[in-house]
Image (cartoon, rainbow, N blue to C red; front, side):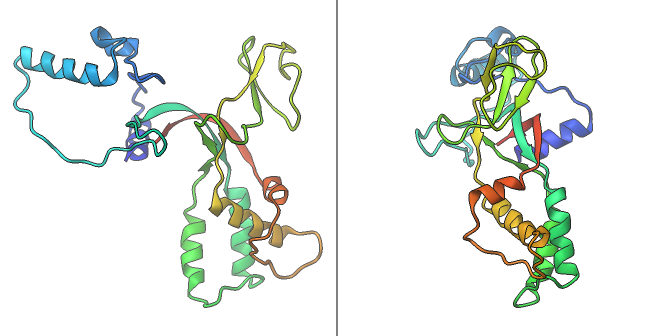
Length: 223
C-alpha cells in the first residue's frame, strides 16, 4: 500500500512531505503540532478538527498495523535513502538461458511462472534500518555530501579528500530470491564452459555478491 501511494505521488509530481521523524516526533512540516509525539499529535489533530466543527464523527475501525517484531512498537512509513540492486543485468541472461534451452524446468510448466516473475521483476531494496548486520559498504562525506563505495574502509572521501566520512547506518538485507537469481546467472555466465546452469543452494556468498549490481542510494518510500 505504501509503495503504491508513493508511486502515485511521484507520477503526479507531488512533493514528498515528511511529518514524522526517526524519533516518532512531528517535524516542522506539522506546523503547530511540531515536536509532539505521534500519538499525542493525532489526539490534538482530532481535537482541533472538532473545535473547528470539521469532524463529523469518530468510530472504532479495525485494521492491520505494522509492528516491529522485536519491540512490538508501531512502525511508521517514512521516506528515506535506500540502497537498491539493479536486477535487469542479472535477469536478462537468466531469462535467455531458459529460452534457448540451456536450463530446463521439471516439470516444464514451471517455466511459465518463472518467465512471469523474471519479465516483471523490479529492482530490490537491499538495505535495512537495523542496528546489527553486514553494513552497506558506503561512506558519506560531511564536507561535500559525496558517497564513497569501497571494498575496504576508506580513509578519506573519494570525491574531495576530506576525512570527515561516516559509514552508512543501514545494513544489507539478505534476499533469498536474489541469491537464487545470482546463482542461476553464475551458471549461465560461468567461464568453465558449462552448457547447463545448476540452481544450487550451496553457492558461496562471495560468488553471489560478485553479481550484485549496486544501483546506489535513492529516495524511496519504505514499508
